Image (cartoon, rainbow, N blue to C red; front, side):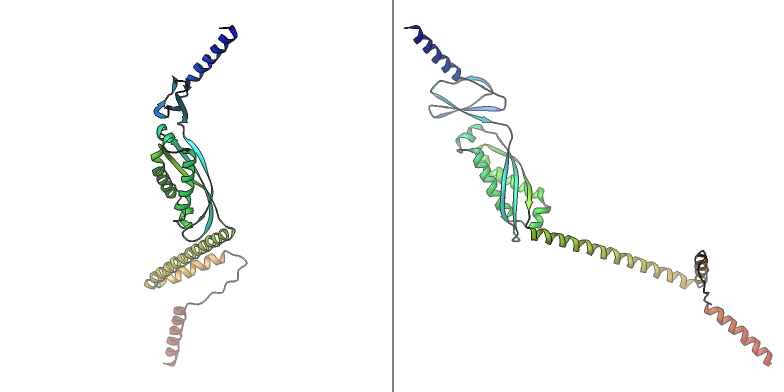
Length: 257
């Protein structure tokens, strides 16, 4: 055998050996098929494949992130919105992920999109805006149940943005303004009620002690007199006028006698 032929054979053998030796990282697994039959997952580290006989499919075991495209959703109360979400999932069983489904990433993304439209179509707009955590948990549970036969674990599903029509944004703003006005009126009415209640209590106290009214009258005069530019008009109490009248009646009766 000539030298060039030996070199060529050696080079081919070197390529076969290099291709037979596989090194996988800690987060990678290699699903090996031998003559078309599943052998199992290999790795991490170094291992050898039988050239021509063995075929390997590499699988990443890290948590993967998928942005669910914006979906047109009609809520239970017939409001059309655009909703997008983010999905976090991980391959737990590499063998199932390769054998059970043609493309586990694409299949998981399609399941996420259809489930998002289905679940959000069963809730009202107010619940979609207020109960995000509950909806996220329901989405995660449903998608995870459907991907479990593929060896996929869906850990988190988060609704990111809810785009509302302009008319609905204006309606929500008007509703919020009306709610604030209602609360303001309730607070004002409650204050008026409490003030009236206090005045009624004060009237009961004064009714039991008539002289308390005179003391309050004098206190008010002191407060008003603090203003130097004020002009004071002193009202005469009715009981004082009655006393004067009685005195004058006595004087008139004495002179007549």
